[in-house]
Image (tube, rainbow, N blue to C red; front, top):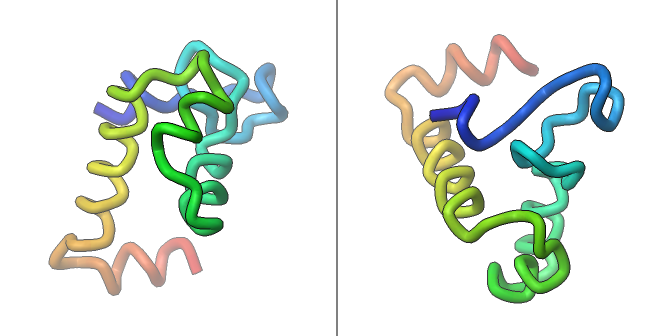
Amino acid sequence: MLPDVISISPKVMGGTPVFKGTRVPVQSLFDHLELGISVDDFLDDFPTVSKEQVVATLKIAERLLTATNLNTIYEAVA
């Protein structure tokens, strides 16, 4: 699922994770949400990103944050 939604390449935005097929950093979605900006407004701001990509990205984040081994994952990236 991840490779279908997010792309990481040193040739695109210096390796920053972006929505596949775009130059839009995934972080920009979370920045928008943190500021209280809706998904629809995010999609208006970044028309190259599809709603399906946003939904899939949020599902990936949910799976990571609700994983039974979250402590292990956190320790690995902290």
